[in-house]
Amino acid sequence: MTINSETLVSITEANQNFSKVARLVDEHGSAVILKNNVPRYLIIEFGKAEEYTTAADQDVQYVSRKIMAQNKDAYEVLSH
Image (cartoon, rainbow, N blue to C red):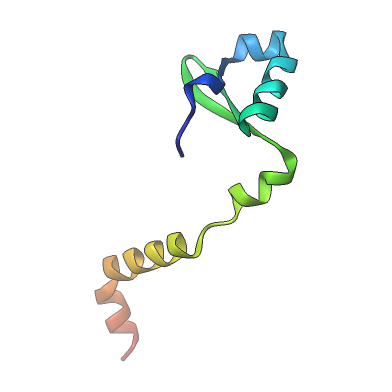
């Protein structure tokens, strides 16, 4: 995920000024709250939540191929 530096907010600032966080989400689609200068929380519009939780078909296929390649020997033994 690419993070827009304009949407970064410290946890202290988010706690003191949540309306700023909401405004960032309205303007940019998301906001990232930092805890100890590390991205910790992603705030998105409720209506877009499904987009973030549903894996793309290409991602699922890539992971499936990777797992199958890593466990090729076990699959061959099980197939007999």
